[in-house]
Image 1 (cartoon, rainbow, N blue to C red):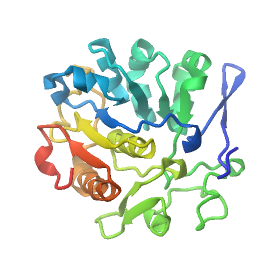
Image 2: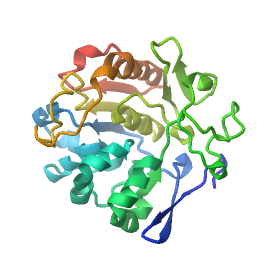
Image 3: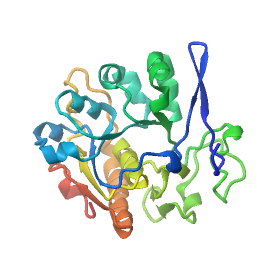
Image 4: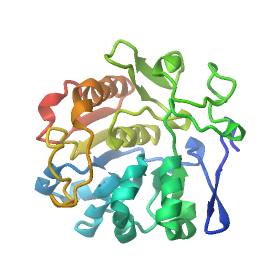
Length: 281
């Protein structure tokens, strides 16, 4: 348990209990370089993977990990999965391409992996780190995940409003956004803010790990009705991006662009498809 009261998560897999740590910045492998985040939009197929692109630290999300089958990435800094539905629909991605890269996942994801891919936890326990959304804290009081947050004495048992975190030093919350507040985390040890896409989580991880610049590839959004680059039309998993784009995803990334730039970190959207949607990245 670290100084903020964050403990490991005990998960039982095929009769054996494994201890998986929550994110602790002091124990993390810091990047301190420009970072490329690869999402799964169809524009990835048109991307030129130059030596410079492959040499910089890379963060993959969901199915974009399959890119390692075609390209030789020199520095895989992280692989991020925040939604357990990805495991339910695409467990074969992990079976084929996950070989112990630094894996950052949420509690629902690891619970799903324990059922669908128990061997992965048994083999790669030491490569897994748990992260959590600040407005969806765990319900186990023993973990005391929100002990450092002055607004709560106990772990909440339902989703919280982001407004509750507007005075916390590690979050910037825009309560004026409609229909719901949006925000961004400055330190995911205290939780990340959700925006409807795992790439937003990955960017907060990159910032927390000390990235000097964050470049986003494959954040297409407009093409959300098309299969992801690793899918065919017949096996495409459901996508709920469309209704969230204007209300949540775009304003969240624009807020991130402003906030991180104020802290010396430039966030840039490299997708030619969605470039016109954003003002600040």
